[in-house]
Length: 370
Image 1 (cartoon, rainbow, N blue to C red):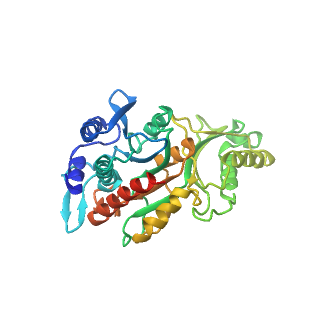
Image 2: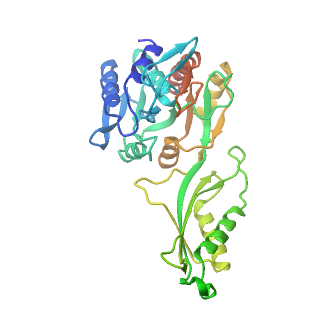
Image 3: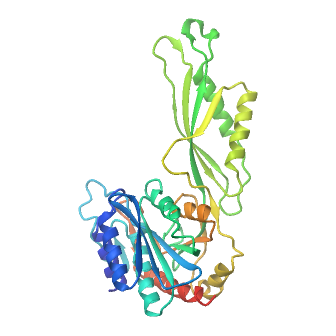
């Protein structure tokens, strides 16, 4: 099957977040048929992650792709049909990230034909809270992976490149801030402590925070999302809640930040409690690949030099953050050039996709020579 035909098949199978069952079944059957041993890792009854292994090795080069997409827009007529014009194709998920999955499947066929060990991993819930990625790590089926390549296109801004390469990502944590004031009658407001005013002072503390820039990912950022307070009568409000995101870089310790900001609030007599907003999975901390890694240097020396590509560092969070931090292995992204992710105008360059297939094949051969 050609790479374009594979992409068309993958796009034709709807797999919006929480509905990845059908595409998982297709990939399981496809990989089994071409010679992989495929194991299932359940996220829930109808949502299954896959770990496909070919050959026997002490450590494996792994490839990862997430099966879920965003949902189509309500008035999108043919989201699950690939439409081609010249070398550009459009369709839901072509860039994020069924193009990458198609390249992985082609690379898997190459590995089997040449008896080269490799692992292909497919996850659910990347567009959610990375539950699939965490379940995969918890399964222990990835413990023998020595280097991981993810098929994400990333936040490429130079569309003239042959393909996209990403060496790191910012992390993200969502914090809930609860501020306590003192209730009083509004006519005697001097007897109370207005929680809204305290919240405004705390926001000023956040905005005044200075972070040392990271050489590739820039500054850690604080993004305010909501601030809420109310009172049920003609009173001074005594409670306020703030939510903010903390977009981290590898040189910033989130625990130290919390300790420092709490101390500053205490010094200004702001009564505050800060905690990560509760969710089922841990938040993804930032990461960057060690550029002294031997295999990465081999890829750069033996493969990347053949193409036009410039590694970037992404400001968004993805499953890569989970694997890099929890498995403590080198993780990079190599994906086809594309854009418009999460919109009706999502597109992919087919020439770039074929080059990614070639890079994957070369990487498998190189890893098994190391």
